[in-house]
Structures are given as C-alpha cells and as structure tokens.
Length: 610
Ligand code: BG6
Image 1 (cartoon, protein in one colour):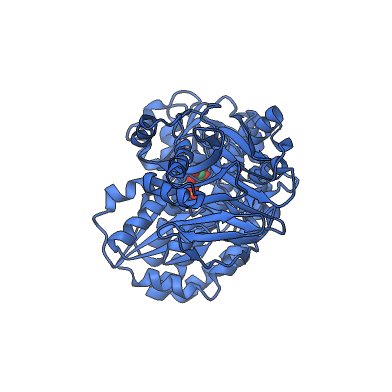
Image 2: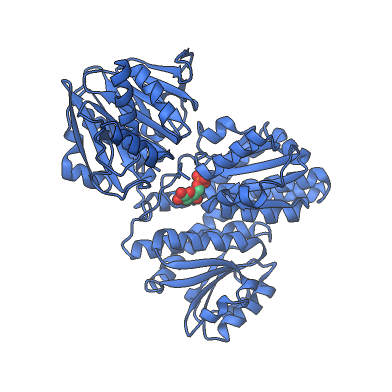
C-alpha cells in the first residue's frame, strides 16, 4: 500500500521541497522506496531509490529539486521487489509522461504483455508503471490528455488510484478507482494525495473524490469529472478540522509512545461521541438486525474479539467475528437482508474490509455499520452508518489508541443494547457507562504511569527472547492476541496469542526451562488461569502475569519483574486496562533492540491491496 502526492503551483520553483514536506506525512503508508518527478521548463527530473523518504532525500536531494509541478510516491512493495527500477514514479515510453499509483492492477501480467507486444518500453516489474503506459497508449490515439486518462481506466483492472502528467502540460491528472484519494486547493497551488495528513501542510480546503471520478489539477483549481462520461461534477471543497499537529511527535521519541499516552483523552473524546445524538441510529441498527457480524483485520480484529465478549456478557447477543479476508469463504453464504455487518477499520481503507462492504452491497446482505477513525475514508462514505473513533490521526504503524477506542466503543454499545433488550437491568448499564466515562480516563492514565516503568524493566530481561506465547482467557482473549501482535509487529520476535485453556492441547510441548509465557488475566478469571499457569510452571517455564495485583497470583511469578500490575478496577473495566502494559512492553523491547517502532519493516499502516 503506497502513498502518492501530486502538486501544481503557480510560480514557485521549489516543487521538490513541497513534495517532500507533504509526502513525509504518508511515511506510515510505505517505506520500501521513494521517488519524485519534478517538472521544469518541460523537462522531467526523476529521482528515486530504495529506502525511507529521509534516507532517499539525503541520498538524492529530493527536496532541492526545482520545478512548479510534480509527483512523489512512497512505496510498500507488492508487484516487484523493493528495488530502484521498481520504485515510483515511472515514465511512459519516453520521458514525457510521468506518474505513480497506489493499489493493485490485477491484470498486470496480461496488460504488460499486450503493451510490450505493441512496442511499449516497460522498464520495471511494478504494476504502477502500467498506469503511465496506458495514458501514453491512448495519447497516441487521441492526442488529448484528458481523454487518455479517462480511457486508461478501460484497460486497468483492480483497485487503484494514480496521478499522471505530461512534461509539456501544466496540469496533473488523477484517477480514483477503489483506492483512497484526497485533493486540496491552496492559494496558489493545488494538491492531490492518498490521505489527508499529506494535504494539510498545504491546505485544509479539501475535496473528497469518489470512486469512478478523475481530477484535473491546475495551480488555482481542482476540477472533478466522471470517468464514465467525462462530465464535469459539482464538487465544492470543504474545510477539514483535522488538527495537522496530530502528525507531529509532540516531544515524544516515537509516535507510538505519544499515541499510547493519548489514550486517556481518547476515552473522553469517544465517550462524548457515543453519548451524543447519533447513538440512537447505531443502537437501532444493532437492535433490528437478526444476525450480527464483526469484520476486521490486525489490531482492529483483536479489539473485535474483545467486543464479542462484551456483547455476550452485557447484551446476550452473539457477535460472529471474522478476519476480513476470511469472511466471504467462512460466512458469505450465511447472510441475508436481516444481517448487520459491523466493519471495523481505523483507516477505513483496508481492502479486505472494503471487499466485505462490496459483498454486502452487491448481494443485498443487510446493513453495514463502520467503526472508523479516518474521516473522509471510503468506509465512511460507503457504509450505511459509521461511528467515528475520535482518536485523531494515528501515525505509528502499530495501532494502539485506535485499538483502545474500538474496545471502549464495543463495551459501551453492548451495555446500551443490553439495557434496551433487558439483558441487564438499567442500573447496571448506567453504572458501567458511568465508569467508562468517569473512571476509565483516570485509570488509563494511572495504568500508563505505573506499568510504564514495570514494562521498561521487564523489557530489558526479554531482549534475547525470540519465541514466546501470550495467553488470554475470557475477556482477555483478544487482549492477549493484541499483545502478541505488538511483539511480532515491532520486535520481530515470534509471539503467538492464544486462549490459555487451549495451550495444553498441543503447544505446551514447546515449554522447556525458562521458556516465557505471558498470561493476561482479569480478577474474574484468575482462578481458572492459575491452572494454566501451573501447567507451564510444572515444566519450568517462565510465567509472566499481566493483571490486577492478587495475592493468589503472586506465587506464580518467579520474580517481581514478571508481574505487570494494573490498577484495581471493575471486573469489566479490567480487560480494557490490561492491554496497556503489553503495548508498553513491546514498545520498550523494540526500542532496546534498536528498532524504530513507528516504521516496522515490511509493514504498512493501511493496506489497500488484496
Ligand atoms: C495493518 C496495520 O496494515 O492493518 C495494523 O499494520 C492494522 O496496525 C491493520 O491493525 C488493520 O488496519 P485498519 O485500518 O483496517 O484498522
């Protein structure tokens, strides 16, 4: 999943500087390679190489490139290895057409063959290059850039967005066909990019094109057209209130640590939204549905597992949770018009989730409720309704505050639904919601403050641990899986998240002396988890416990460091707090290993490819 940015200015000559400044905000989208094409006096200067934008800028002086328009691309490799030739932007046959894409061209192999057979000089193994050649091909036929861009989409199959230009034309053209795209109009410049954070350094006067639309950028305006018939569409820019500062580290060494520390405020902000006027709409969707599915990927999926336990306990409603890519083969035939699909995606652009959205829409399988963080995302525009997670932008690739917000949203909705369907009495629902509102922000802060030091010390003892398990039980099932994911994502160590009662049915064989197993507990289930801890200790494994301090658990940790104690709270608040020491543990191990937790290798924050 990549990030593209195109800028057209009236009279500045520092296009390299502008493109680097804006594109830097998209680093979480890809850091396998970076390139800039800058146009000056009808000549395209193209520089690109492997590495992050900082590294390639240092190497090739991207920010010194001159010109009044250009395109930049940050790559997360899919088609073609992360090499210099596969880096984007690309040229067409000659150094006249220049462009870059984000997304996937599914007919890559056949279309590349067709282009080569018709004499095109295709230089790379990257599917983005075919977008430029498609425009090049139609320009030969039409001699008209607008028509060439419009018709190029006839040849290109898949979900993508791209920006393209011609050396001797001032305009930059962009196409949205399934991947995210945002445009902006500043005083004397216009911009198109994959995401809002890279538009905000230039302007907050933004336009959200829809799929099947194309843009023509000139220095003063962004015009929107329908790709199908070329008709001009009336799209008025809107002022974005998203705070660009969210994309700054604010004095923290990493965005991840900053975002962990933002969780107390995230609870307050999301509770404000949940208690607001729109909650009736969301609760009605939940109430009216005959069957409920939660579909998500990565950390959003782990939060959805936690959500399933809250809906069971507080509302007596079974939530069928599934991973995005698994949903269709696993449940695709079990849906009907009475179903509700809760689609959970902080970015609102994850392709695996949008595929389920399209399935539900095309098959008329009921309603969709999006739980998302990025305002202006495809999921926001296309779901029947959506709940904003109110986290502000999450820049670090490993999710933290967004996972936390999702868990709070599920706990809240389950309590409200349970109150409405009579599964719990109103006083119990009200008291729990009061705790979410009044106690949880404070408890979250105390947990961060207390377990920060504990996690830092424990991390030092786990530097050389290459393989471990993180086990949960009941409400901490999803929490343990999230802890395991964090350790995999940013420490590059194998950590499997699993249900603790299942460990004895096979994986226990891996335990030898001092083999580390983390147990994530709640006061409600620790009596059961103690059995599972014993099974590991009997084989001299190292048991690490995360949870409230309980006398009964003390004897089960070899030394004090192996007990990450969270503050006392209600049994249903406890699972929300337990994730914080796991976030911090993975963060400190990662930093101690010299890894940048914000940009873990091979990953990307938002995957808009299959
Ligand atoms: C991955 C990210 O690409 O997508 C994870 O690296 C994230 O951090 C997952 O949890 C799902 O993303 P989203 O935006 O759909 O919640």
